[in-house]
Amino acid sequence: MRILPEISRTFGEYLLVPNLTDETCTPDNVDLSAPVVRHRLGQASPIRIATPLTSAIMGAVSSPQLAIALAQVGGLSFIHQNQPIAEQAGMVSAVKKHKAGFRHNDVNIKPSATLGEADELLRSTGRDAAVVTDDGTPSGAFLGLITTQDFNFHRHHVGDSVESRMRGGAELVTGTAGMSLSTANSLLWDSRQDVLPLVGDDGRVTALVQRRDYELHKQFSNESVDDDKQFRVGAGVNTHDYRERIPALVEAGADVLCLDSSDGYSVWQKNVLEFVRTEYGDTVRIGAGNVVDARGFDYLADAGADFVKVGIGGGSICITRDQKGIGRGQASALAEIVTARDAYAQRTGEYVPLCSDGGVLHDSHMAIAFAFGADFLMLGRYFARFTESPAPLVKVRGQALKEYWGEGSARARNAARYGQGTELHFEEGVDGYVPFAGSLYDNVKVTLAKLRSTMISCGSTTLRRFHETATLVQVSQQTFVQNSEDIERNERPTVG
Ligand code: RVP
Image 1 (cartoon, helix red, strand yellow):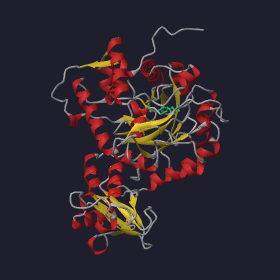
Image 2: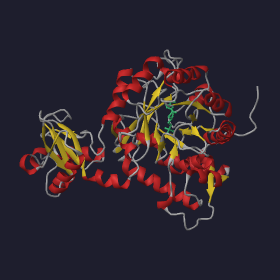
Image 3: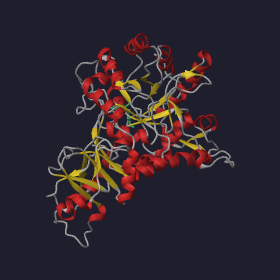
Image 4: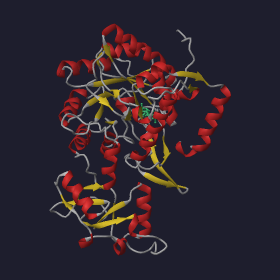
């Protein structure tokens, strides 16, 4: 038995002390880009992301829709592996085949629905327009559009039908399925509409083009795309069916894979990494984890991991620490592994990026994670709250919430991640709710503004320099208790 000399500490136990802010420190100058995979020191990583945020390998978080939105704003999603191989590969290929600028038709309503129902739908999804189809589903026949501008409850009755206010037929300009984005954008601007539905020969909507996306595209000019300009997407794999799952994901076009395990310091992960190197050399990139100390990092880096994921027990829905007594505060784990990463780079000339996974409760925790030296972050709770996440939206006592459940919960039963590939004998995650927060685009924009602002206060314009020069201070026990009480008060509905 040995006891580590350091106390196990979390992000909330630290604050940043400002450094000198000079003339170069402006929001436009801040570069948040990060390497995702292993590379020679001094060379660029073959996969970099402009926004250092990735979405968790979880059924409640990473769907094709969220993956597309996140790639649009410069991040990266990892599609979860707790599903049949063909389904996961199908999700990966849906992202790769999605044409930039086009949106899925995912908010639909029937003509017989009431304006009250339309209002509720638009509010709950954070959208300005819903597509009206004969049966209210995305595969129904297209009839028109209903937007927030088409009704007003001072003039129209909540019980009036959608049909009475929707725009369709000659009133609405539509595009044809398969038309180019530039043609669709011209039509959109000429029509003065906010949304242009593209309709196929069978009368069904194949995609939407939105004025808002055009503006977004200018705002987020650093989309995560591959050499063919297709969106980048990652995928989780496990240590059980990897001989079948990995080839299917590679075939589907996954840009990067990641071993998905609550405890990655295992010979099983080494076996998968060796399999990938033998079969694909370094044409297939794969991260490994999760680990919480230098031994785990060195083991996986030596075995060929392209990045290493850090974090056990820190996830907002995670009860591993209670159930198994295993884990480590995220700040302490990162501090030790960042030193190991840099020593490994000096020793071997290879830089293996670190992904800090879980435990971000506030946007400020992201800045703390980067100050500690994380290269990029993986977030579950953060993304689960958005319109684009696959989790159902529900109303509890009038409050809009998104369901959010752990992969180790009875609901997900992710035996490949938590069991030894067999059935789960006990739960390691909870099944709860998070407050609905609206669109990913709006939220990521605000989060990145905060991060840039923190970096400016700390006199840095790159994440590397931010880490190298950051001054951190531990907060007192009293502040920590107070913070915890604030979280409890503000976010009571988050735990079910
Ligand atoms: P958070 O962002 O704090 O919600 O944490 C997300 C992370 O929590 C995931 O990326 C994963 O590492 C971990 N997780 C997922 N399911 C569970 C569980 O059921 N215990 N934990």
